[in-house]
Length: 322
Image (cartoon, rainbow, N blue to C red; front, top):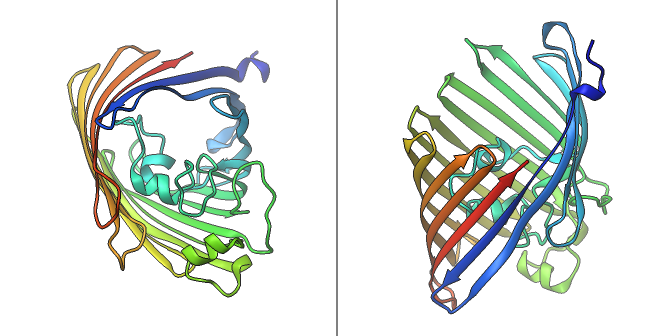
């Protein structure tokens, strides 16, 4: 009889990027280096399940990324507690194998994935809190309707909250067929932006400890045998700053381990000034072995109504899993 220890797995992955652009910047970058331990610690009748995960990041400053436990007594209801991805945009939340090297601009600016988030919070897209989730309507081998409802600090990873408010994130997933997924999401919260620079950026808010943050949008993903398509759009309010972003992505697999991908991507920091950034990406993906994934991308970065120059860039990323 298998013990709990037999169900626990240790694994990890690392990503190295080399990039060259027409501004004479040539660099190697250790993009991610992660180690995680986790697994199912209980499997019962009628879909009952308990699992946990601990994930650390060693690229840059070492930090704890994930630390959560969750229990689902039935397929329709589960609860998760700890530090985890907050359920917003599809490309980040749903664990798709990333078709191009970087996440879409809207994810980088509004989901707190990196240092470029407009709130200034860089939390790998995670937060600390409580989440309810489940599959409401079962289909033939898939769930037709699923949901997520999370209550979060809203202040990033490994960090206590700094106000009395909590972020609430709601997400609804509809699958009309096994190949098509449609999602809508909404985040409502408050943040503490107290520096003069932040107060000016977000509209000289009168109560910086209770600056409203709103995120709402949706998208769709189609997964065919060779062709996959995805599109998302999101709007945001951070104080008096109104932002929006979206992307269109397509990937076609010529063979089981070779595909091409393209993405059209834009983000507006302020919809009233239209000082936006646009990325046009074309990429080639090659997976010679399950543990090795190679991606070559050409990216054209275009800036409108700003003083930044356009950029052309080639990038090569190697992902190794173990």
